[in-house]
Length: 208
Image (cartoon, rainbow, N blue to C red; front, side, top):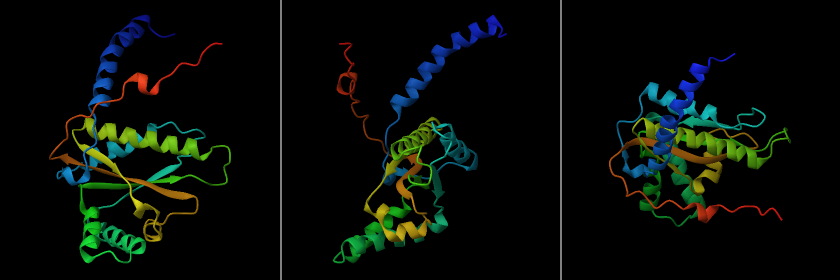
């Protein structure tokens, strides 16, 4: 049987934890990759950030997502993919536009591709649930990065759907590239945006 004294102490601590959690959640903001600079997370901090993903809800314990770290030495490969994907979409793209696409691979000290395993032989867990799990994993990472003092952002784009990117990251059938997560030291932050109020996204099911 649990010790009543320990239970009471635990309940007393909860308001402090709740307040800290609310502060962390509501103070987090997106910092675009071009506003992120070195230093990025060290090895221990990176393990904390990525490890936080494992606490995401995961119906069926499928882990329907995985991450690929893109280290500095491999950024040129991603840069080539970004330029190739641009030219596939727009053969008339200029050399300057292709260079701008390449430069996106070099922003932010930490760059991770999030891949969702959205379709496989397990028909019990549908695509929506898998995406929700991936989203929760990403949010855990963003909040952990924020708690460690870093800025972070999610980025996507048409290159995520390109054949070249699928090949580079060895995406299997049923897998989709969902987004990149960029983390680093924020050199500039925007003013905190106005959060939506409850009345904008909450309704109550009537009892009649």
